[in-house]
Image (cartoon, rainbow, N blue to C red; front, top):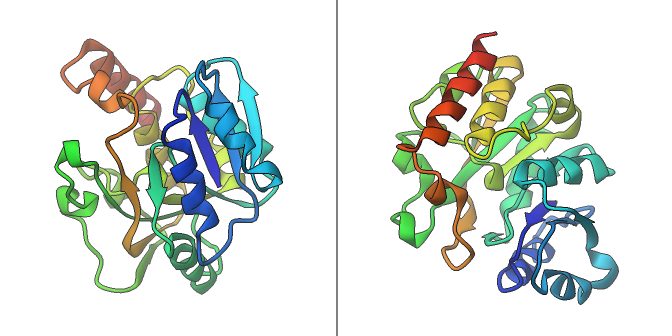
Length: 234
């Protein structure tokens, strides 16, 4: 479990608690502190050896996630944001799908409940995405990642570490849409698997999210979109 964080002393404990409460235990929990100026480190310290704390100078969320993956000792990475939390059965459902498909997919993802200030709806409902069975495996997931709104989000995804590293991880030069690019790469290059049910809940009591700060009408968002499509087409 990799949890990037920045100035989240009020919510990081809830995120860690949700990992520790999993019916299928995570092999390790890594918190990557991206240069917090508050008491985030003090909260994490109270968990002792149950959580591995990694501090780095502020470099952005992509660099923090990449650092967590590089630090990880195991072959599957489950991401969680420090202001969100997992439901207790999240990892068990994902592991069941991984075992049933012999781990052939690079990406396993489930639904996520969006934050109250974003409507509080389920993300798959917003995307118009659904599956008819407990999980659906696709060797070519291009039509999923090319949907107008991608049905996968990092907080509700489990990714094979080897594949994540093969595609270069998250682009540290982008401050928005970096997750869109990595899902393009994973879905176009490798098999993917959608897992039914909601495993993650987005909260709205953390700091401002980048998706709100960098709205789709901003120049930075448009330039990021041009950048990711150039890379995908190349």
